[in-house]
Length: 581
Figure 1: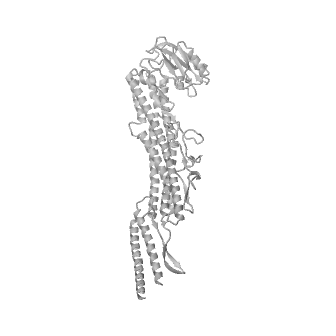
Figure 2: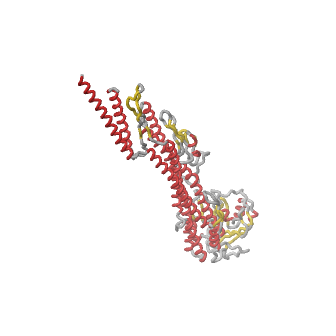
């Protein structure tokens, strides 16, 4: 071997070792950088005319198990979805309170029952009546608070979807720029290993949001396809679109077939919401459009039970003094069939509950609501008609007299409710258009308007006699019985249809949310554990081990010194040879 060949070989070794030292040093410097993978460069023999002529280095490579990397991203998608659902259910549980809490909707129902028991023993007590009204208001506020909490969480989820869409679009644009840098580097022979690390970091960010598929093209650019196979990044970015909604209430829903309501996520005008099967975004849609909507229906079921229980009793009773005017809770269509039977007593009462006049109406004689209104309006001293909203209004012509109703027999409709209850003429609790409960405004300010007894159903009433007997607590007792009676609550949201009393259903609802939150947390922990295990495996295969890199650096230093020695020896030999000439 000639001296020139020896020098060439030694010099190539120096260059190769310098590059290897640079790669190893870079590994050590980036050991704690998130997303960085260990880089290696493999030496290869240079062959000239069949003979070894030094060493060169192959392209710098990322030490990554691509299959494990994809499995880790898939686990990241699953974990993100489970974690966000668990987080929202945890907040929902906080709003409902614990099963042993003393300030929940179940305890509010208990408080109301207790105050009703006190009023039943002293029905003439306005202070006891005021306590009942206060407990009714507290119960309404608590039910409304649950609705507010649910809708606030839906509002939060909706905004978080908008944030997720912005994060996806930002990641796609970042990846598109990285693709351009990789293609330029590859075209000029520059290592792309570190740029590929950054590409995969963007892929990881996308994987957290929803289910994607991706592959690397021959030119080094990464193409990404989203839910339903929709292209997100090809030669250019296909952005996601989403319009956040505010405010959101119980009536605000997502319907992909409608142009109104909550927004879905679309790409190029195509709604892909239904294809988003996992990930953070999927969890947010599940919470906004399914979980919390179902929970609102359960709260509505409870509220409906409360309304029915207290209003049925109030409508069957009469306060002293009786209200001067009664108005139906909802608009009434005059031509609708009344479907009434039995006898309704209508009385005009003075401030002490004494009968001034009365009439008994045979409800079977009135085919429609209009017929009933005409019959009521024909009673002397009474006016009946519809207000501007289409609600039935029954008013005493004398402002000093009140209107009392009593269902002597029969009722209205398939459930045979009292006419007053069917039309909501004397409700104590009302529900607004947005589903909120409240105590009827006049009763809230005047406890005397809370019905304690009932209009007498004696065959005949003497004018001037008591329309409501002194000490009568029949309406109060009816309210107590209604709250304690079993009724059927529709199922939904993981709760089965139940036949139970209102307080028990409220307690079951709290327990249901607690169980759902616990199950979601357990699922999130399992999926987070799976992700953590895969990330650890990936880090073990692709991460930087400082001990190994330090040892490698020492070996390279030795190799460098050996190659430098060869160069030095060859140079001395050249010098000796020149001196001989």
